[in-house]
Image 1 (spheres, helix red, strand yellow):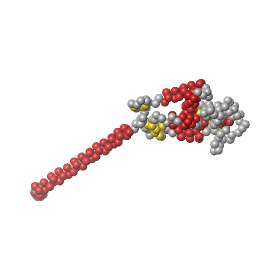
Image 2 (image 1 turned 45 degrees about the horizontal axis):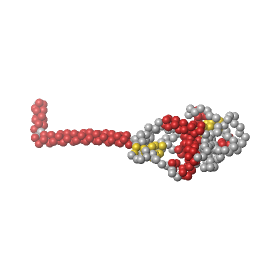
Image 3 (image 1 turned 90 degrees about the vertical axis):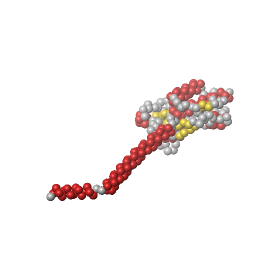
Image 4 (image 1 turned 60 degrees about the vertical axis):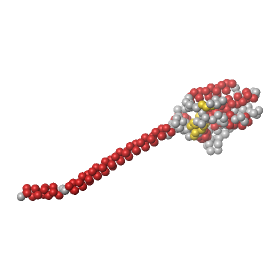
Length: 285
């Protein structure tokens, strides 16, 4: 009996499986297969497009990042924490090389490097691996230092003064020893920097290179701000031949918010530095 019922149930299931039903099932399977295949294909295509977009973005970034552009991970300078923050073009002529000699002289002689002289604490110097310097009169825990960039600018200025005096047939107010020292200092700085920028040449009567090219520069204003924060209250006399100023008098020009107490009875226990040699505008200029 049981086997008979099983036989009928199986036969009924088979009999209900008509041609039309089987066709619908096959269509459904094909439709599902196509849908699955299309979905999988779309995912693969989307993945390929995403990878392509990312790759193109990376290539574009690498292409645009020229050697003159600062990296986001650029190391700051160790003392004033400066980095490349502005761009400037290579140029042939600036007001400092103008045909207007009156303007040219005014600009060069107006360069002031008194800010070069700074007072840094011994703790700060030790943290930055600097040797201990001679004592700052108004705070014996600080030493007197000269910032290198200002020193180089000072050297350029006195070389210009010497050449200007020679060109005009005037007596030299700067010693040859000082001039040759400055020229050598600038020579060593150029070699130390070893600037590898290729400057493009142009077909001109005058030799010209670097036009339409740019370079990245640090901020001189930020260096000046660092110098002012660590001021040594230094100022050289307006007249280089003036003898009324003592060496310590040069360090008595402290800003009101410096916190230093300046006294007239300070006696140095060591020979106080002259600072940078005089560069003031001469009466005959």
